[in-house]
Length: 131
Image 1 (cartoon, helix red, strand yellow):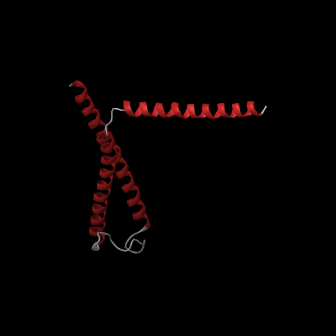
Image 2 (image 1 turned 135 degrees about the horizontal axis):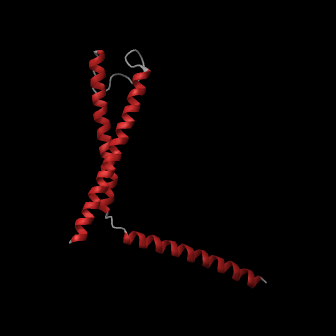
Image 3 (image 1 turned 45 degrees about the vertical axis):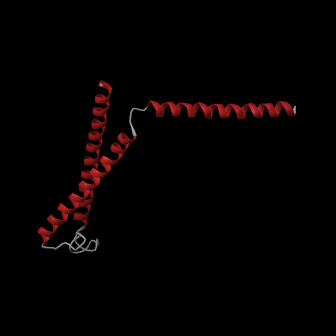
């Protein structure tokens, strides 16, 4: 009876290794058949991130310039309008508005640049396949 139990355990272990092997083979085939090169993947990851970051920084600069002009404030050396604490110079409503607008602009720019980077990769694939 001990031999039967150990065979059963061994069979289960071998079957588990077979499932793992099949999964590894499927993942390898997916990687080999993936049309995107490393450059394509980097472009699709980096372009939306960089574009969102730049858009966020430009919006922050524009916001600070607009708030400074409206309130007669001068930005500090690091580009901010104070210590970041909501006080007389910055109202809670202005802070909420800045946060909402900044997030929405960053999301829109990231989404559009994501679509743009995918279009660039698709165009490269079409050019490569027509050769």
